[in-house]
Figure 1: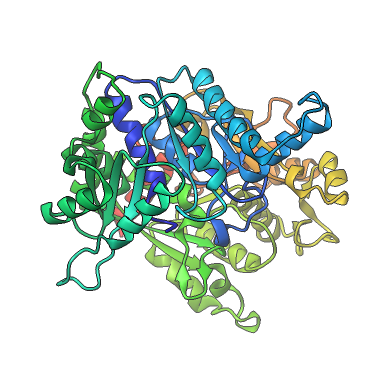
Figure 2: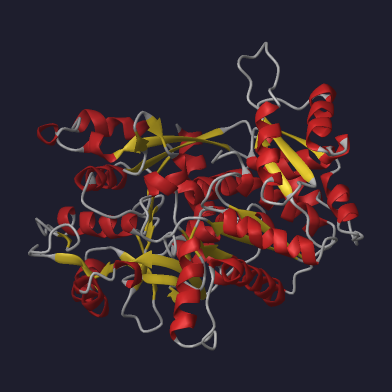
Length: 540
């Protein structure tokens, strides 16, 4: 089933092999027909992760980068749509020399070529390839066929790992192995036999269940690895090693370790578990609800970035989702001043990225409350744009100031779309109408951002269409807003902040810093934000 933990399992296996001295890279194969994840709603598919080269991809790519501490590229990500698009374009340009192009073998062969290319570019000895979806469905059968073809040609170089869920009816009943047996039979039907089974369950697997799975699925008992629920996803590599997973994989691939050291990683997980002091962080957004459920995946990288920096400072983050609609005026369906008072209970507030008009006035009211009441505030992309709009409205007195995304006819277009993007929007080319990927920025010395990074020149990842309108920059700066990060041309505003003498931490970035935070190397701006939140918590 989806959400069983294939992504974090793949990431953890990569971390384990990396700790043994091997060079590792990771690939995600998504079965949907979308060419990439850029046009999908976060409540449907989770966060859209952006790579340095501008590839918009699945959130699992973020886990790969965080666990491996490696920057990946578009070659590490593929979808059914991107594979078909490549093959059709090649056929149209006579790339197949007039031959008949067939689903098999040409689709699987393209998949294999991409896996080989990713290995070559990363100089990787091992490529962890995660196939999205579930065994037995039509969508991913061609990707499984690619693995079958590789396994047939190079049987000792390809290892198949099945991640399967063992349900439990109640806490006093037993873990059920039948769904796993059925999953293995479905995989057998594609011509593959798993070499290892990761048994996902609420509790650790007992010997009886391991014996039962091994007997019914044609494996040794040591090939069945217990994968119980853990307090933190960063515990997973450590937990897998209790079942000797690293040595098992190396044995099956006839490889020898050159090192065995997860010392820093273990120290990081211990800091997570040993933290006692709590920092309360409120995330004000709109991509939370799916029916009666809250979807934290919409802002996965933001959550993980908070955890990285909290561990660095030895504190425990308590994150609460705040629907921006509650902060709107009562006449607009919100709670008005009563709703805003809830923000007093937080040590820091984040307004993350997003699109569209829903809940935007509530976000603006929340930002104003944080600014006026000295609550540490961190605006990410849209969160910086709205902080700039709020400043223009309530400090500069520009009533009705707005972003043209919300009000195209606003008298004061503080945030506007880039001229070169307008043409793409008019042509309905939404998937190519954004500033995507890594761009350089220059920081101003002595500012919060300048001190946090400790250097002048930085590179950060973007995903947006709108920018601070250059026509208002001088006016905003004169009013007290500091643009502490700008593009090398000084045309684009990258970081906006208030001086520490005015506010303990009020800062927004046009880029997405959460995309580059790592467990052992937290992002400098998240570190500063959590530090400010920690100090407010201590004062409270």
